[in-house]
Image (cartoon, rainbow over all chains, first blue to last red; front, side, top):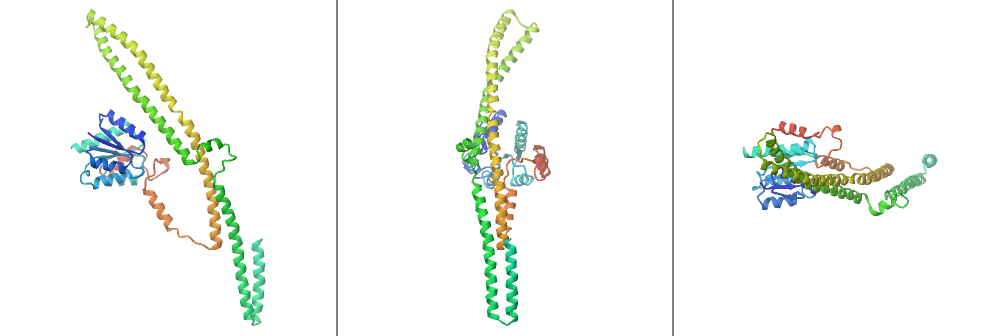
Length: 124
Length: 256
């Protein structure tokens, strides 16, 4: 299971990386915004994408849309982990095809639940 | 005062104008009208001039005065608000990384201690159930001795890491001070901006300039959809969720 973590703050990437490791996912890579992440996703075989929303350069929602528009990446599971908490935005992310949405600040438990739920569905 | 003078002179001109028209003196009447017009413009220029001077003063006040401020030392180190906020990001990032270093450093130590203790407990329970022979018991006492030694060392390592984590929180004091100053600065800028706007508004009123506001509205609408960052006051807002439970409820209402 290869996972890409996209967030503009290195501390947040590190927190997510540690939580994922505790859940048994050790194969992770990092990117600091959508425009760095997209070529990484296209050039490699990631199984899962965890992304923030608000980033300089390309935002997480634009990255999500680009992923869904890409033939090779369109079914990649995407979890959004973000401080963006407007109902409008959550609906926008859902319509763009997000697989899970976690609002910051979050707990290890919330992240675990959402990831497990996503993989249950992907496997089913 | 100036208004009163202007009014008096207008009345004067009007009387002259009526007299000239009644006596059929059209040519002189036209000259009077022209003087009237010139006077109106002069008053206008004076008013605009005064306001422009105040506007200029306001713009000058916009440059935050550092010379006689008590923050001089701080300000010379960090020239402007954005630099100071970068300092906050840097400090909080350092603290977060240091804390995570210490936690990562401590976790294996404490889980090793736990593992050793669990193994010893299993054997100790066997001893209590009298399931252990003399040679095994000698081996067990040796391991207990080793464990107690290492536990003493390891717990002091954990203690020292915990106190490092505690010390790493000292950023709160420093960043708090810097942020307070930035808040002060923003308030000064806001005050100056308000007087600037009212000044500009007064100039518009006198000169009769009207601005198209549609672009501004469009900009505000666009901003609503864009990213906003953490919501500071979720309990006062209708358009935001208040936590993960709200998000889950919203998503399940959308069929997730």
